[in-house]
Length: 412
Length: 177
Image (tube, each protein chain N blue to C red):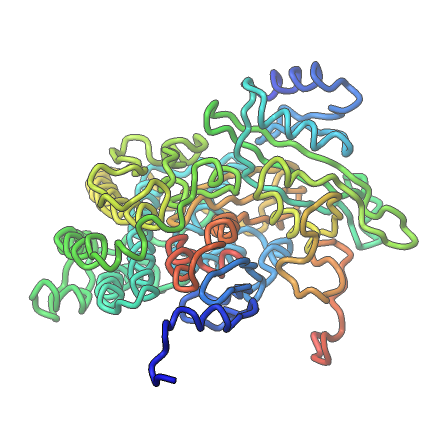
């Protein structure tokens, strides 16, 4: 008998493997929060994937029935905590739709500015964390370096870095500040003195100029990176029909080819806020995509977010230009004891992760009778099963990461 | 298509016995549908070329009940549970709200959950929304592919968003209140 194996492949047919039930999460660095994925795998190939939710369920909807709307605003912050400004905006607009309140032009301009800045911050996390899921650390740190400046700017506006509760019923809680000490990150990156004092809008302009030039770096690091393309292109292909049927919205839907953005196609109370602003709706397919890319795959969803950052920069610049001449106050006072009418309103707004819907039912009391938050990520996550089944274990972080979910929003 | 036209279309298709209510002056006009016909109406709304409601925005339950006996007499709704469907059409760009109203319990004595046919066969996302509605509002969706809790643990008792929900004293030995 020779010491070498005749043909190593022969032995593999004898070593039979059973299917394994593997638990991914709830504590896992790649599941974007406390998500438990129960996998039934045959070796590396996933046969069945079942998401288990609810580890971050904090009964926000029940609490909403005991608080007046301004008191419920902080709870919306904590839903999608990476895009708190947009959550606040969605809820405030829904209550304003219910009570028939129209905010002044100045408040609307500040809202657009802040919401789009929040979109940039959220997409930076989405992009960085996606790179982290796939194993690359640098884009994550670059993204957070940029995001740090946005958070410093938000801190000057409302005092908080993550849970802002800034956009509230009737407008925003504070006007944009005048002079602020320059954010340290911005001073370091743009090589200015740390003791410099600038106006908030000036600091924002400096930041946008810095970010614009960095975007091509991110494309080199991730979008055009061969390893990234190999792990994302042609995988997690979400067809248009499946996306619509599963209620996917936001970059997930637009990455599958549906040209729908609530800032342009939504309800009048929301689209009027963006009327007069010039921006493009980003939807797949892309002429400049690598040849391995298929419509609706991970790469498309990622690229939609990258291009949306560019559009958000455009919108912020336009809002900065409108702000000095915007008429009115930054807020219409709303009494916490004001009674909601016996009526109901549902409104969806384009949050960075998709269409976040709020459904407020009033019953002649200050507290809503029902305060429902429909999470965009909840619907986006529901496609995990059709997308992941039949693929490798290593593809799961790539697919789930491209959906860009936040468990706080899913579980509420 | 306006809500009134949609109502006329539905009444023409299904009859007055199935399309039993409407409110066109609400901020979001809604149409009430009889419980047993919700699946057929949903399928019609999704596939008919005049409606094409391919997107189910949200499916949620609302418990209309006043638990405080002193205030119950002045409560302005008949106690019931409403399941609310918000629909949008990507192609025709119109919206509508459809409601289904059921009794709070199938049987007051046993506190059996009310039945509503599942529309998971029409819109795939209804699967998860209905699981949440079952979990939190306590509505049993008939013919649902996977009727189990989604947000609360599998062995949780009670349905949180019901107005007369009482938080349990303890869960697996841990005191809650």
